[in-house]
Amino acid sequence: MRKDPPFNMEFIYATYILERAEKNGVLIINKPKSLRDCNEKIFASLFDKFTPDTLVTRNISQMYNFWKKYKDVIIKPLDNMGGTNVFRIKENDTNFLVISEIMTNYEKKYCMIQSYLPSVKYGDKRILIINGKVIPWCVARIPKKDETRANIAAGGKAQIKKLDEKDWEIANYLSPILKEKGLIFVGLDIIGDKLTEINVTSPTCICEIELNINISITVAVGEKIIKKGKALNKLAAHNGRPNWNDIKYLLKMWKPSCIIVGLPLNMDGTRQNITKKAEIFANLLKNKFNASVELHDERLSTKEARSLIFNQYGFKAFKKDQIHSTAAVVILERKLQSKKTKLVAQYFDWCQTIDREKIAILLNKYRTNKKIPMNVLIQINISQEENKNGIMAMPKKEKEIIKYCDYENIRNIFNILKNEYKSVDTLSLGTSFDVKTALMYN
Image (cartoon, rainbow, N blue to C red; front, side, top):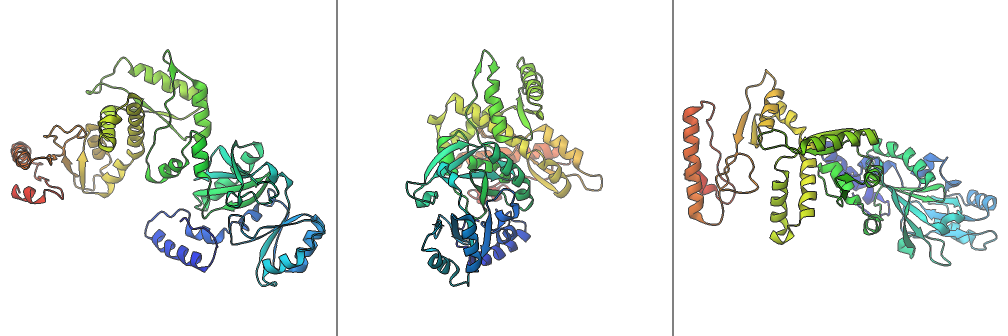
């Protein structure tokens, strides 16, 4: 849910509607209940060991006493954004009363008053947390000259900085709490060593970080939800040796729970000369960084990568580096999606399609004795399509006569298999563009 404040009743109604979708299995980012519970200004006050001295009130007398105690304060609304209606009141400021009346609507509306933090001149830092993991770079928003507010919308200048020790302390303390509440995408605001806000509705500054640093926060969000990967820049190796400092930096940035290393094998599953090198590399990763490392079969990943690049960008996009990086994504996604086999075996009666013997073995392994054998559609590549690695017939679209020949061929193959194997009893043909032709061939 990406809705800019104000935090009003329309916002509340939207969370009620999204909560109904959530109960039907839809993943909502962020969790609707937590969006209601965690007001961006007040939520931070629950962690008062990190926050500046703060008062939330609509009582002007209490505001006055707070001002006299701290002498230099910030007053801001609880339901707005971008520095809108944020005021700084210094000692002996003659505008205190009128500002207090406006901000509280004559003591009918709550607002927040905080002690002023002089360190804002070094930047109001926006720190992003994705599903409990802290992004190690932040945007420090520097206020322009003679301006109290650092918000970019109010003219603040963005500077990209690494998190300092206090930033990490605050972010690491909050991250498991936010994750438990279903707050997957959050922006912390920190001035100096003080937490001022926890933004849960519409955190910004992703673009500023991505434009300046080799890190994709949008992918960090996406991969958590859709189990998809995206290539980072290639790490160079010299004389077959990787730059371990580069790898160390990436691991610190992303904090992966597991590292996947592609295992090169021949098509029949036998080892190649390079297989041992991949295993040695995996062991070095494990020992150097005390990391969880798994090897995953990389057969046909380069072929699949070529097909993906060609289908999306055309022949001109073929570059060696891009093919390698896309192949790495293919290997990672295979690993991310490999756990589906057990669920398919337990809850489904049909599976389309099987492209590797390994999957067939796993389906058989996870199929309980109480269930009938699973129906599996095998894919037969009769049209020499590069992206068809397994066994499901798919006719070419170009010429109608080729389509008919393909269907005639696949029906003949089906009849041969049916006569030889009793379990072969179903022929699956047809997509939306050729369903009539498929029906002609039963």
